[in-house]
Image 1 (spheres, helix red, strand yellow):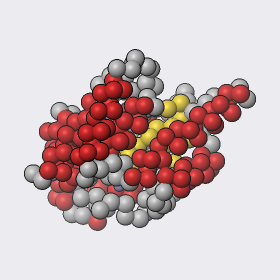
Image 2 (image 1 turned 135 degrees about the vertical axis):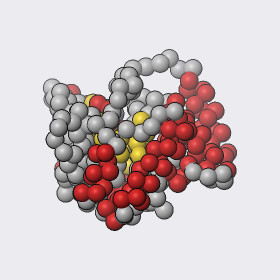
Image 3 (image 1 turned 90 degrees about the vertical axis):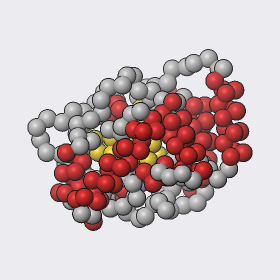
Length: 277
Ligand SMILES: [Zn+2]
């Protein structure tokens, strides 16, 4: 962990804080509840022909997340962080630092989601263990930030077993998947992450929810490169008279559930490999 890097990033945030506030398209408009939503399948919400919503899983990580927060601010992007409970549970200095970091993520206007306590496949667990994975993480985030996560992303996007779906539905949580996988869990350079993003954008030309990991330094370094790709692509689209990619956040994807049962993962997800320590 690098406290020197943390203090540098906090200094940067103080310096950038004097810049005039600008419109932040992805900022949560209000504290409306995100509970009880239909699963977010990763496609753009109605009214948006093209969109991108950045999500960062597996943190918070004191060595990498602070720099990302500064980069998100610099680009006026509000994102969603799906956090792993064990990272903020304990009395070690890095646990305390990561609890503070969680507060900082929320303070800067980002959303926090539940990514379980141990980053495990929920469907492999007994019901009592599933409950612990979700509730302990919810308790820790609520204790640190004052707000309980209302969104849940199952590790590896695996949420099909009836007992894990039932546990999520019983807590009224809204499950969130993705459309664009940057594959930052299998490459090790910012350039490779950016190349995968560009490739995915060709395969999913309307964009959608983007999956990244704030625990990976190359992912953090890739973020501004990805924003350059988006800016260039948007300039081309606008020049052709087409709708550019709107940068959204996950609260704009939540549609209330009716009486129907909560469904599991709808996509042919390729993100199957372990992506967390
Ligand atoms: Zn994960």
